[in-house]
Length: 222
Image 1 (cartoon, rainbow, N blue to C red):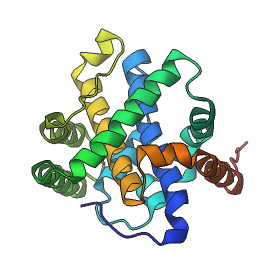
Image 2: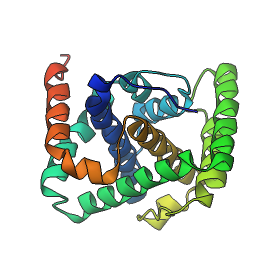
Image 3: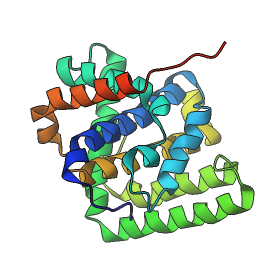
Image 4: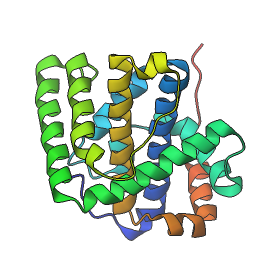
């Protein structure tokens, strides 16, 4: 599940992309939980990344640079100076928990099997509904997260406003986005990522993030 071998020359860039994917999920979860801000098109991008079981290209699996632009821009400051405020500290906490859960998932066969079954069910639903953000698909992926990832540790405690956290649709979106973060964490692990190594190669990861943003400049349409 979500497994493939990467050429050595691509490994650091793939690690930078995957870390940005983890951070993107954490940001979207935080936005819903704190402000009720809906992820819009990024929700579809994140769900499609979950469903990309056999994709062998990290960027294609995660979406595109535009969908990763904000987390790529934040990745370097977080790696170099650490969080500068409570919201960034919360993002780092979520991201580190997702990275750890990605590792735990890869070593837990029953949880891996449950995730794969949930993804395959969602894939069949997408064929039927032609919309990955359909409510029942999100609900199914959220249930997959609860049943598979909820058995692993650490448990992710999402902080925010009770009116958003208690809303069934928002709660389902949050769990689905956390699952997409774990998908990105699995990509990161498969590209050779681990937490101590991230500290050691933070300068190289910053360089990769900056180069990715430079070679994919943002364009505006008027």
